[in-house]
Length: 445
Image 1 (tube, helix red, strand yellow):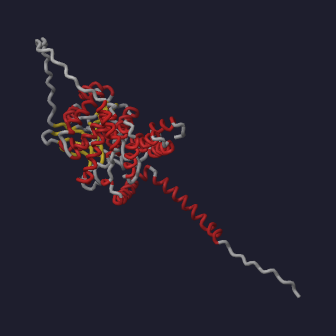
Image 2 (spheres, rainbow, N blue to C red):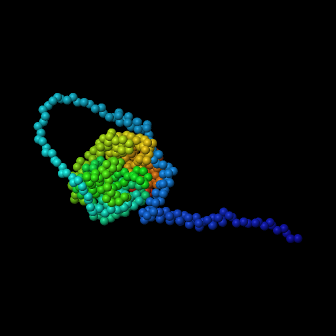
């Protein structure tokens, strides 16, 4: 009799183990493919040709789901009231000194009145090489055109690499363009605010084309946005300037009143380029604007005057300009009050006329961050930056991350501060303010 055989143990392949063996090369290929796609997507050549199409498609979907014109920032009313009470408490009461009585008028020698040389009725400068902008590149493209007047042979690409290393960065600040001219060319640049049409015409008549930063909107555009243009001529008979526009084309006519309205959105900022040997001539043409402090003071007064003469969106810009000028004068509490009023008007526009609301304004200007931060209103900085970034289909604004990082540190969130500062460097490598702050915090950039 044969001994009983042990029961045979049936063995089955482990489906999980077999699955891992089957999926491993596919997963590796997917990871490699995604890494390659990310690398190709960030290539400058790809961004120039296709990046803007992808960004625009993303924006259409994002803004349809989350309409930015309906999202408004509301400053903390308690903090705002506290600031205004503090200002009132420390504002000295004006005292009236009695007049000593009539006195004999002093003997003076009349000063001859200088009659300015009348400007030509029409001027058209030549020698500008027109250049169409790449995606988000109106600043570099317009500066390249302005440089071409003086024989510069480059184009917008080195300017963009210097001022906005990330091709998807939405904006270049005037001071960044000025830095490129001063550091990378043999020319000089001067940036001023509070300009007027007469100043523009006098510079053009003397042979200096002028860059202006202004608002921009029209059919086919998703609301108001910022833009640079180069003015190379004017015609009093037709009441218009001639502009080289990096988006629309060359020799674009712009009526005086239209330019003034859109220029207001950026505090009437203008940039003039010149060879170093002609600096005295440019300063003479600038007149009172040659002195930076006097220029800002005059611009602040201009904004204050417009506050009481304008309505609607133009009045919003006037309040915003007043805040920006007070920031330059380091009156941060006063600037915060001005920005509070600008944001109040912004909220009204969101209800009454959302299509004209300039909801992108924080893409281009950082004055409110300065005002609220240095007024101790750190949560207003955090909320404003968060809302600004949240309204973007691509939240790429190094300045907003930077200021939110500073405010987070101020309220005790050091980890969040470091994260924001590092993010600002992702979107703008070597952004000096962020590098400095991270170094101060003792962490690697």
